[in-house]
Image (tube, rainbow, N blue to C red; front, top):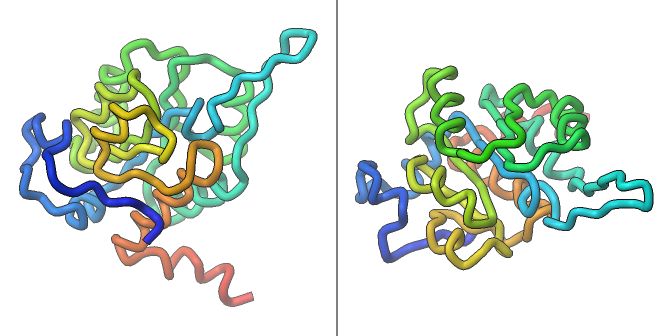
Length: 195
């Protein structure tokens, strides 16, 4: 399995009212919504400007297909980021991601609003992050996840840590693991395996 599973000490998610004895497999099976940070998760974390001050970002193509497969399986995917970028808006539109919140200082409050609007409980949500601003959301969701090159604090708070670093297929890795756990991976591959 491509994801490192964190065992042992309780994570932040365990301290916020979720049943500490809930097995990882049970947590994964409940997930209906993935919320993702952008810089350092969907990208490698570098922010590049050209001579005209135009920002560029690089996204991994397999992450994009993974997001589409997750949505095809009937689940929700959302982007929650502190920065604001036209590039992120374009990428979200290209992938059919309807939940896009940019310029968010208080990620937890916005995450709660998203959950409420979808009628979801925290245990039905996975959040994948890479740095300190992501911890507040990770503390309350059912499945906190980190990219392999996330900060030490975020990796310690995560139940799942990808083998891939941010911007290099980590989101796809997470999605494959969740869909396999939910016995949905073979279903979403039908269009590709029958050709």
